[in-house]
Length: 94
Length: 241
Image (tube, rainbow over all chains, first blue to last red; front, side, top):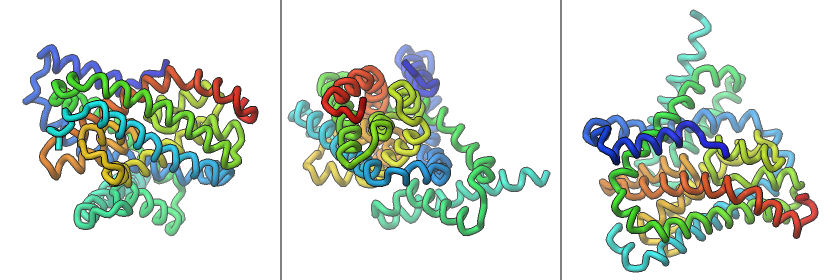
């Protein structure tokens, strides 16, 4: 199974915080800074779509339809089911 | 030395555009001004208008892609801060993400086929909701086109980030946690960037933490279920086989 290094790193970092090897106060600011720029780090990959336009165009409608409708369906499935199963427990996280 | 100029321009230009886009978004809060979307569209138009080759741009801009790795590692912090709430919600989280994963795989491939796509296109669509490195690997495994999958994953992430929270609010999903989980499940890291922006306004990190759980769990669940589900779908849709 493909496990990206970054995801593995996140799991290890979480364990380090959990076991107290790393103190939260020491990493809070840096991590907040990095996550605040997360969107920026995706921009070059987005511009990279330019290089793949021919591949997207070869089947424009199936790709567009599949992407848009399926994204809305995933949002609905996870959002509604999770909220429903949590019941009143979800009221405290407004 | 002269070779460094395009690198510096690509890097500085991307950062500057993104900072402006972020301000525009905060002023308007309109989905079409989503900072990632706005920066990408502007850059694509700029490159086309100035006749700059993408490969040339990538020398500088691509340096930012490297920063994705430490940024994902940093996502452990919101996760840690919200660990108690997450532990209490383990069952709804697991059921929600597994259902989201199944829904995503079957609907992406199925709708691709319904809209007249080939089996190869449908298989490239199937892993679209998970984070890029996992999606590319899975696409290869099931006989999709990895490059096409990578492009679809980015489009999915941008779309989920642009309209995810609004769409969920419209559906009546009021819980910040459930909405965050859904956006992370559907739209991976780009979705999490949007959740962070939302959380910032309300001085919390609950949505971000939920999004990180959604992205991570969906990656694992999809890696396990995708090959099986594609085989089942192929049984009903000959074109996929």
